[in-house]
Length: 256
Image (cartoon, rainbow, N blue to C red; front, side, top):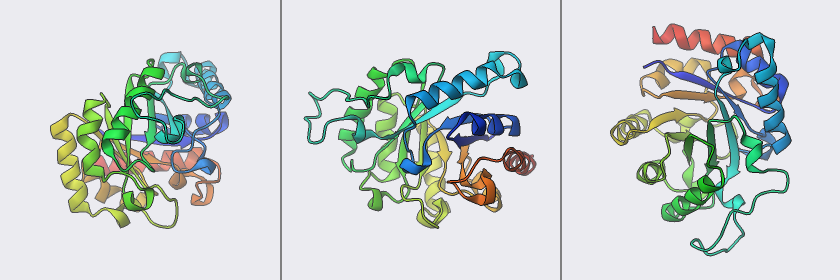
């Protein structure tokens, strides 16, 4: 299986840089709003339109699949609302039209330690965004800090929600990486659990070029990065086409 590279971007210019650098999936998010910070609807629409119209990619079918981070799942529901009765409370700057042309969407589990509540809320959000074909269950390696379910507990609920992918990320963006929070042996077991459940495994969390050989041994379907392909390695900086191309090159060389 060829591992795909997902690059998170926050603007049309970054999206073009990521696509021309060779990213397999373009993920739109606002890094200043957290690990899975939700972008404004106008941003998601602008990026989709820019990529579709760009002559650099030829026909629209050649545009990489688009993904959107939707923040934390609980942000979409009134605080303290009954799980069964509550409906999605969408931000004023975001409607289902904001994800026209998007294939992937994800929302984090921070503040939702009860995986059953996470499942109910996720299903409600899915009904609000029926055009998304590939839902991503976003789990946190630093689950205790995020007050989220442990990564293993997310697998069964992700399947029951019809999710295609389990993303394992870090909630708090500090100097630590995914491998500081989860051992390779634990990630290996999680990878096997995902295979058995029919889920693709995506790994994120301040991944670095030097970690590629170790990460590939875990047999993920997707590696997700931002900081590693930004100027000076700073996730708050701008995505660099050259850095994306270098990550793609290293990934391809290591796989083959």
